[in-house]
Length: 508
Picture: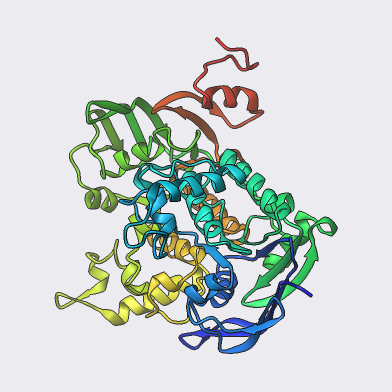
């Protein structure tokens, strides 16, 4: 008998189905992947199991019993726990306080914190989830915060753990450490459901895979009996198209974007530079480097979000140094942020208003001094059609769209018209393979149309696939700029680690 059996589950939002007749079986002591594109209905299905949403139809059998959880509290009482993609920790509390939050611990209302810390320490050591129970959550890295979320479930004796996109915010090293933990949990008798769109990690860690597409079951297969290519076909309904980066078209005259000796000093510390870079029209300059080495500072200095301390930034003949963000965008700069929720979208506004964030001052949308909602609606409908954005309605709040569809709306807004320069910072972070493929194709289309693109990505494969030239950044300094032809990966690895070497990899 399986530990979990979900049969013929239906759920709709705003009249649009999110799950249709979905079935899922999870065995005891199993790591089970729920695989699919953004918007395929994976998280919705698990939110119904966890009691966040109520299903419209179908049944859930857990450990042989028919269950219907009215809240996460009910699910936790049945030893089911869920770690959401966006963590639910209180940053001003300690690790220990977050883990026991909402529980009546021994000694309540004045719990014996030392004893609780000891219990938490024992769990963390048992499962190699090293974390200091007395540390404030605000001081922890993202990987450490995820460990706290998992310990919180284990402290509540969870038997089935649900992890929503667990590696989306982790470095490769942190992801591998997480996989070690998950294997240990399986050995200890737990079952794990991983919601993901990342096929390589499915092949690495799971026993079974259930694939959803457009809210429906596509297949359930044993991981050992499938391949990455087959899973990709299941996910998107076709074979992936290889990225067709052709030879760059002849450069247009002049330089689109130029940075000369640009530096950034904040709170007495050097965060960037001096950086000197040129991006020509019709070219993609990729910035390669380990995440957190000045990429965000570089992008935000160019956009004017941060004011550089010295040096000069030019877009064509226009000096940007004294201009604000909107003035720079009006000159033809588009920005794809690495954090769409924080920097690019207003989650409670609908698609039309989010698309209008960049264009609300354009005369084509203003009639008699007022915004023309009819024209705005028509423009949004065209964007939704052109960028294949899945939504129940143009009036739908953007928070109800999947990450991939949110990103497509940002692309539609920032790539509208004829931008002279696009700053693409982690343009495919958190996206599935189908959405990533679409983003890559759009960047190459713009590049071929003469746009200059500065792409900053921690994904070296993405940089190598798309870039005409590659600049390697380390601690805010550009280590070298290379032509993307017969690249020596050993040399790039040395530069990313802060070691200058010759092109044979010898450290200089």
